[in-house]
Length: 109
Image (tube, rainbow, N blue to C red; front, side, top):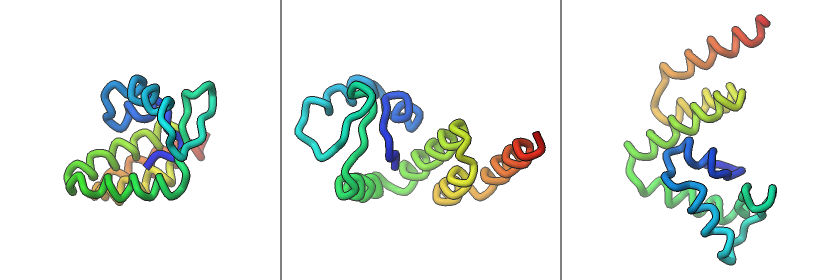
């Protein structure tokens, strides 16, 4: 789901002990690129695709929770359009209206 993974972004999706998990991954031989002193991980596209497929196996309710958390993260990062799409994927059609209101308020400023 996350293109750029940091401990803070993973924690926003509900990953407990995100910093420790990210640090443990840094010592493994994975198809990822590390940036910012190994504090930011970007997966190879095929690994990311595989991980997204694995995510879908967690069950509909859990995936929706994670997608909604991702949408909230995107909102907090100012990525309103992406957040709306993610809220829809999460099965929360009313949530995008909140984002749309925020977007309109931003445009009025």
